[in-house]
Image 1 (tube, rainbow, N blue to C red):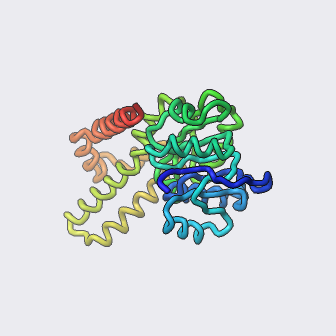
Image 2 (cartoon, rainbow, N blue to C red):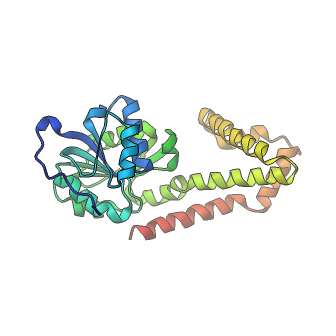
Length: 276
């Protein structure tokens, strides 16, 4: 089988799945795990559709109470968690299986494209999640299509809220969200690499540098989540003429702020290009 298809058998109403996850990759699995842990979704009313046999076996071990299948069962709602090139086929198959509400997490595929594949009478919500959702610390943005109601958006928030925070944005802002939040983890990982490399260059052994940088980022993000003001936190740790001030002066000389702004701008533009 090389594309997603609806199941060909008839299904009794009692067998109708509340939410089917179309695509059992890392993000799809993370969402299913979060949905179960949230207590909002009953495992026996969820299904995951995965085309690859080895991955299906893994998913069955991960979620023994969830139906893991290779065709889309009769369902009420579907999360489209496939690669962009498969979105049209997965959308059409989910609607053919009865879905009247869709949440797409496919990068770069706009609502108009999804609605065109879904046809009339289907509420579409588009989402941009980021990879920290894999550990329940994600940041996602959603936007609704022409017929999506507040109820549909709240449903999408309940799915994505199981793995992090969710914001509602107009669709034209999703590319910018992708540029800073979707691509943002890579920027932070680059900072981690650079800090560890700098520590090693100053004589710290690699294992210590990596361990301390990991703790540094964890502790710093926890402080930021608690206090919510990065500028104030930066000022609090920066004594006049101290060591931190000396380091920040160098970063200012190299225009680190400007480099981040340029990175977000480039990623935003690339997201726009992928959606055309």
